[in-house]
Length: 241
Length: 392
Image (cartoon, rainbow over all chains, first blue to last red; front, side, top):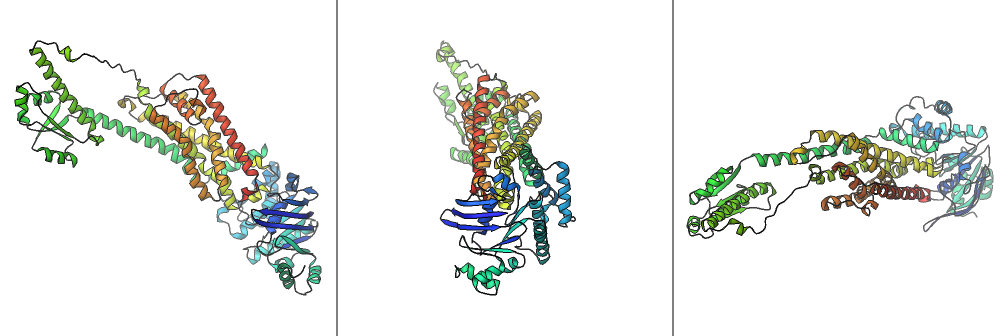
């Protein structure tokens, strides 16, 4: 459960966020949609507590991202944009490192790592060094790393960028599975089809502001079109208030 | 606490697999520095030995003009080479390196000497050439010794005691111990030790901050439920561990190399047994937090590993500067100097090698100031890690 109200963030002379508010419910997939530079990553970074908001409040499962950052991070699984692995470690070691940092005991580390390697079909590559991984293999290991503690809330920043069709399918399936298990999934994208194929709720963000949010049907009604693509373009261009 | 240990273990293990890290931490300092040191000292001692043992070859123009002088030189082990030059061509021969130096005995030599005057001798030498300096010095000393002998004879003939010409009799009592004489060369050794200590942590300091950011592995790491202080602490400890190991291995390598270097033939000796090695390690290892903190702070300001490398190679020179000045000036330890990190370790370490008594007060000041500075730098690194801008 994510609840964001009135977020503002300035980097030097750039006002990256200028009043961002939305909710993302448990057991639903929420898509954060916007052009490059609209403020998607900044919003997600504030939620994952790696940067602080200037104004407003962000809550994850009722915990404040600014004042209870440790609790927030404990309940959160994060896959940042361009998530990197340690090249000299194997995939398994990369995953185990995160398990240990979550404070897991030794048996638990081995057990959950083994489970995720099986679940993400990483068996063939898990014991090779991450240096030689393909884009898809890197993503899978990053995902396993992010999900190692079975988080209630999962944040994915442009996860499908640069992936082949099979990897995208695998990812979608996994995201749906997370929803079924009751997770709150928030993911960002700049591709409308991507969001339309997956999301229960959509938040469209432009110039650091949420321009429209709701179910796909609500957004169509709001923008007065029957085509989501067109709705996104209109909303993002600000022709709909 | 367990998070710090997890980060520490991960950084130590992962970097062990990085060839670049191993090269800079273990090969560069640990092997290269002692080898360079051994080569230069061996060459220096070979040259010294060669210069002393070989007969001095002296090209002489006009051998017939001064048979007594030539005889005196021969008796003193000089190999006279008869040569034909005028003044200009002799100069040219020396300048071109064909001859190291040339002695010209003019035709007027015998005449002037017989008349009781000052007999001219031309000694042509290039004093800018350090290779020929010791040979030229020997020749000049012999020539003035011969002059002294003639003067004494002349005075005796006139019934005057030669002491008239020697109103002051200076005796030089050399109290330098062989270990003391090797100070300059041993001073360079602490410099090498500092170098390899810093090189040991060089790539870790970069990799754990700028490198992690560049690879995109920093953001997921920061979104884990671990305080940032614990993350940076684990990283700094790993850097410090590599630095300490590099330092210890370098000292051990030096102690082995010194067994084979003919320091004695240079009139030097060094105390470098296992006890001294451990004492020097104990003194120098206090500098590790300063180096690790400094490199981490600088690396976390930079945008990329490449930029971090450039900055760090420059920053590494800062702790080296006081040592170089101290080596050149032959600075003696004092309580005030012990407050300067890197210099105090240098002075204490060279003192240990010389076999001097070390003042406990000096050790206490050195430890306190160095550890304090290290603590401050680590604290700054932690503050930097808390900023938003750490993500770049």
